[in-house]
Image 1: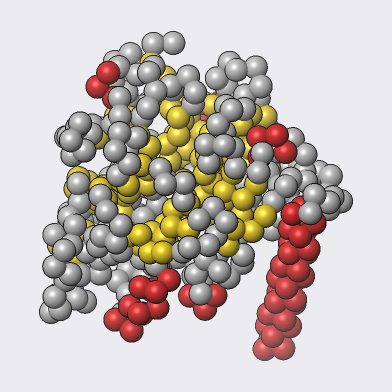
Image 2 (image 1 turned 45 degrees about the vertical axis):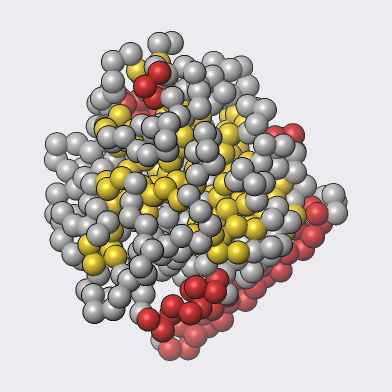
Amino acid sequence: MIFRALLSVTLLSASTALVSAQDAGNLEKLSQFKTTGTTEFTVVEQTGPNADAIKKNLERIKLPEGFKISLYAIVPDARHMAVGPQGIVTFVGTRKTKVWAVTDRNKDRVADEVKDFAPSLAMAIPNGPCFSPDGFLYIAEQNRVLTFPAAEFFYESPDVAAFNVLAQGKLIPADEESYNHTARVCRIGPDGKLYITLGQPFNVYAPEKADVYEQAGIGGIIRVGIDGNGREVFTRGVRNSVGMDFNPRNGDLWFTDNQVDGLGDDTPPGELNRQTAAGQHFGFPWYGGGTVRTNEYKDSEPPADTVQPAVEMAPHAADLGMKFYTGKQFPEKYRDGVFSAQHGSWNRTTPVGARVMFTPVNEDGTAGATEVFAEGWLDENGEYLGRPVDIAQLRDGSILVSDDLAGAIYRISYGD
């Protein structure tokens, strides 16, 4: 039995090394505009019993008057989304190995085609796609960042132009790789730089991890030039942010953060944060959420300049993706406010979340009162019928909501 176990480990390691070598070889070919020999896509069926069941569940969703929700696409493990600047295709990340390309060719606001993107590359937790205004797609993986110029054009082929921004093992130190809290998200900031969230893997990390985490920006948000150079830690004191966006009015960075577990059902609160200057500290690990101190650091002094949340959200609702609404389809009250997704609690005795929230943002940059915008994915028995992850906006002003439990993307529209 021991021999068989050792043999299995050896074969798995050899297989992983082979895949990594093949991936590196394919990436080199793609960066030189050469073919890899890959010819097949994985295409996801958009009709049938699964689609019908999801549509049936959407009848339960409650929205403000005048709004409606519909099934936009079947997308397995759908996580964070990036809508192409030309409005041709939406790229959808996952916590597994695929990024999906979702296309509505006839513009009836329902996807006609869902297929995998860049199938010759072996991606690891490619959760975070984001676009630059000029059409460069960036994908933040567990420990790599790639860019795909003209992705809205090249996605029609299995081979796509692809380049390293931060090569494998350069996003975080290789020996700090973890299976936990490694769903990265990215955004291009008003300064033209690439911002990437780096969740730390622990509930509360031990003090001996502080130096390496501070240096790498783990437990924070880093920014780099679009070529990967000029790396700096922009945001500190974050436990695990899986959602961020920039206020289009003034350029402030807003981000969600998931709070510490194990302190009780009703504490600490989740966070929606506002950052107004580089280098600000948001309290973790001294604070577990809001002003609630962690047991591990209760006897040490937190940074004096700690920034408290702009909004305290429901405890353990797992606030993830967020988006400033810049469209014109929705009523005036929603303009320049934040839509955010609550994935739902995993260890609360009575589950909360599985809904979309709305937070108005005032002209002075402060937050107004948060309210529930869409709910119903958590039924009366405490069973999840869906778990919202991220919010994106289509060019017509409607919004998309991803759901990694149902494996779907929904469209919420007003008055159409």
